[in-house]
Image (cartoon, rainbow, N blue to C red; front, side, top):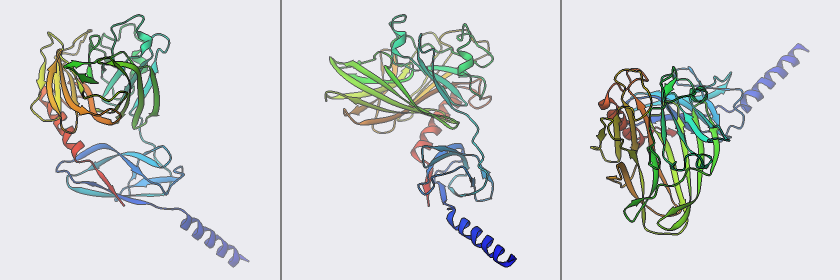
Length: 370
């Protein structure tokens, strides 16, 4: 009797273990520099339920991860230059990734800002709800400079004046009305930047822990006399220096360029970074508000892959690229300051070096192999 029980138990365990798939994959860093805390996305089509699967690296260490969609996982990796690492999903208790990104629509009745952040920096963009009270508002990007790695957005909106430096950070960046702010994008036609009204609709696609992603829709924007619909899909990842944006215009075909850039404030002792192809950067003192941190310098940057040119138009430093209506254009934008994270970019040169490193990382992404 006992023999049959043990045989049955053995058969059950054997069948169960055979039924559990243990997919393995390799991540390859082919670049000549180390990757630290970089978020990677891996597609695992053979798995439909991750609830009892843990992720292990080649040394048998359990790696925190999160599930994105039905069959993708996100996790952070450390890979030495020109190295590979093998990973395996095995039965076990999964370790959840620490929440480092967040997105939300704030003050829906009064502003309906879309505000988002990662562990480095926070941002917001404006909606049309704001226009009756602030008619000069455009589609530019605002930066909130963080002093904490955890989420600060909800707390910042409770302050009567978030333009004054608080324990969590400060909004010391002035978008300045209808400008690109710190990384907005518009059409460039007939020697004009066609900056337009704030967004009509926002759809949040993903809200942490390692990626925040959303789509902004702008309807009936005027570009040289014709009306267009514009969508911008923006994503921010943990430890990401810049946000990723995928832009599309739909409407009448006409020759045009897309321009992404940075508003150059007056009287902020600004320094431009224009020496490297495909990148622009800016370092300056605060452009609004009250900042108590000593020697604070505020930063912005834009990276646009492909065949681009560089220009200053209407006091805005921009990257320009030919654009065909109905196609998608990808670029990256963001900001930071020398106060936080402590020692990460302590001066202007450090920020410009970080932008260059971002470009090199983007040009040699970590790849996945079975």
